[in-house]
Image (cartoon, rainbow, N blue to C red; front, top):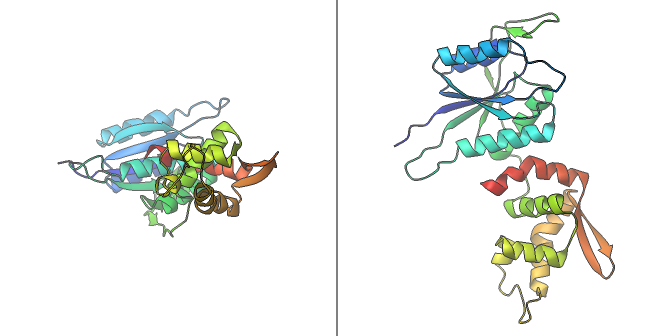
Length: 257
């Protein structure tokens, strides 16, 4: 039987001590580093020191690509990792304990990480203050004070079938409601799967299908400002808004869970 691991998720930014010391202090089994550098930024030499220090402490490391200055990529990456690590793969597997260090990346990554923790309820966020801060040099902080556990609050996100439709619209462009019903049937989404009579004898969507699509998917997404419904001849087409496209980026990880 597998044993639960303590997994720490940390942005691999311009820090050394606030990555290495919490991992050692709080006995991380594995550290997942969110790694990204702008094309015009040279990788700091102390990044190698971070990896060497973690290896010397017997801590396994992984790197995941994440744009540290992109809110929605930060949410998506942390949420995907937290969900995967906290979900057992089978009967013999166990959920890992996931912790997210909000101190080692950008402010945007910190916000994204906090949102991901609240949305998934699968990880514990914490913040580490440096004992002292550098003046115009890197790493930006030295040493660490005791980590502060941060409270989380339940945060609602679109449900899985709403995310599936949102991602479909973001990927493929506007759809008629009829096309969304077909998509729901192909993916066995609940609004169609649980419909008593989704199609009539000729294979056309029934009024019940349209009503369930509207009630369970389109209206909730429209109320959040994620989709807009527009006339297209005699039909109505559903498209994503900019907020909807960003939400699809942030929550699209649920398609693979």
